[in-house]
Image 1: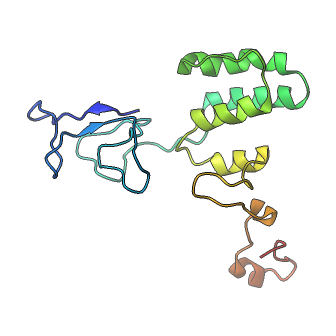
Image 2 (image 1 turned 30 degrees about the vertical axis):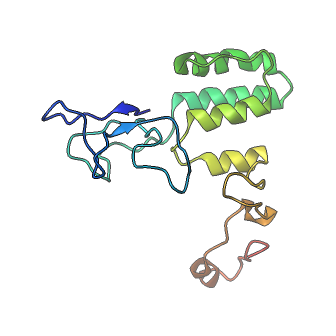
Length: 169
């Protein structure tokens, strides 16, 4: 997480925004639609190299060890053995400085997946698996059940006449 004063490496001074305020990222956001440039923390999950502006020069993470641990824990909970999930979850939560709850359930695992894998492009899959994809949240309304799977592209359907479009599309 990137928070606090943002320093110009060349001068050692806090960067000043166009409006004259210091560029100090805060955890507080007054309004999602009218937030100031310095409100809200920034993602610092991956290395930021000098000179990068938008595109990042780092390897794409395909899978992390924490994901394997979380999968194992989820399996134990779904099989009715949440106590067997604890050692796997403890490795993830201890590294992240998080507390383990006394009760391990799917709601805790879903929340932990949300925190652990923020901005890693996998949340939709977790939401579908835990049933939360279809519920409204923040600025998103409810989602129809058929959207759990993607449509088959028309180019694929015309190439293979044996395929039928997924229901709802």
